[in-house]
Length: 82
Image (spheres, rainbow, N blue to C red):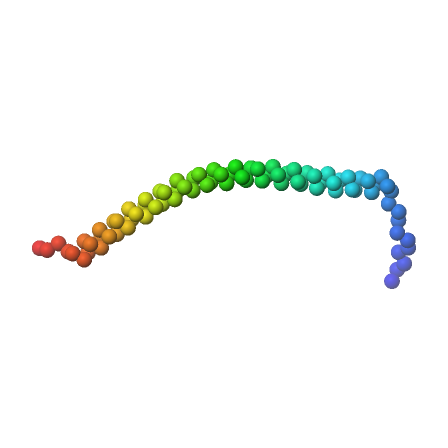
């Protein structure tokens, strides 16, 4: 196996730059996450309002379909006498 020798000392300026970029990246990520979270809360509120309306429409359609099905069954079970 080849001898790689002693590790090279990294310049303090490069170390500072690396740590600075890491800290800036973490701060930006936290900021971006909070921005997206606020937007998502707004979207969920709108969807919750729309869900109530959509559920009411679906319940009405289901009730209408059940009534129509009951009427069709009643017609089939009691055919018109000729």
